Length: 359
Image 1: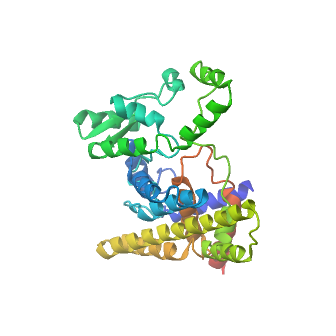
Image 2: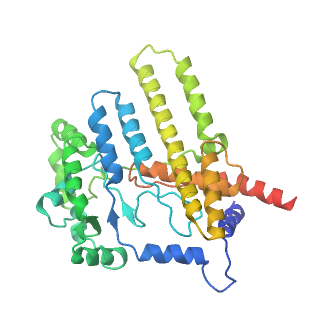
C-alpha cells in the first residue's frame, strides 16, 4: 500500500505540470501557490454565514430539523462566490480568501459576541490565556492590515472587513440563543446539578474547553462510493428508497426526512461544481494565454461531469474528490475532518490512466 501511495503522489505531481529538474525545488505552480498563501492574511469571510442566516430566518420552525439544516447549507453552498486563482489546476475554495475562515455562528456565537460587543480581541477560550499563538505569517499580516484601518482585528489572529463587522455582529446575535452551543448548554446546565464542576474544570484548565464551534468530526466521508457511483446515482437510489419506504412510526418518518435532506445537499454539491465550471469557462473566454485557456477549459469539462457522474480519468477523480472534500468542510469546521485512505480509493483511477497510456 505504501508503494500505491507513492504512485498516487507521483501522479499528483505530474498533474501539476512539473517542469523543474531534480534539485531545482518546487514547480512554478507550487511556488506560486506557496508564496500566495504565505503572503496572505488570516481573513474572516461572512458570505456563507450571511446566506445561512437568510435561509434559517425563512425556514426555522417551518420544516423538519433535518431539512432545516440541509436546506440552509444547500442554499449557502449554491450562493457562495466561486473563486479560481492563477495557476490552479484543481479548483474549489472554502472562502473567497486564500487564507479565509468562516465564523460558524450557528454552531456557537457566544465567544464571537463577547468580542464583537466590547470591540477588543478576546481569547476564544480559557486555554488561549496560556497559549502562545505566535506573531508571524498570516497573524503578522492581519495585525498590519488592521493597523492601516482597512480591516478590524478579530480574535487576535484574524481580520474582518470594516463593512462586514456590523453584519458579523448581527449574524452572531441572531444565533445567540439558537446555536448548537446555546441549546446544548441550556440543556445540560438545567439538567445536571454537577454542572458547576464542569465549568470550573474548564476555567482551571483541568481539561480542554468544549468544542461546540468546531464539533468533533472524526470520521471520513465515503469518497469511494461517491466517486465510483457518482452523486446522481446516489440521488436516484435515495429517491427509490423514499418511494419504497413504509411510514408507520416516528423513526420511519425521520428516516425519510433524512433521505430528503441528503438529496438536497447532494443536488447543491452538484450545483456548486457546475458553478465553478461556469466560472472557469468565463475565465477561459477572456484568457489570452493559450496554455491557461486550455487548462481552464479542462477544469470546466471535469466539473461538468464529476462528481455528478463517475470520473473518467485520474485528473477528473482528483477534482471530484476535492469538490466532495471542500463541500463537506464548508458545512462546518469539524475537528479531525480527514480525507481518509486517499491512496486506496484514488489508486483505481491512477491505475486506469497508466494502463491506457501503456497501450
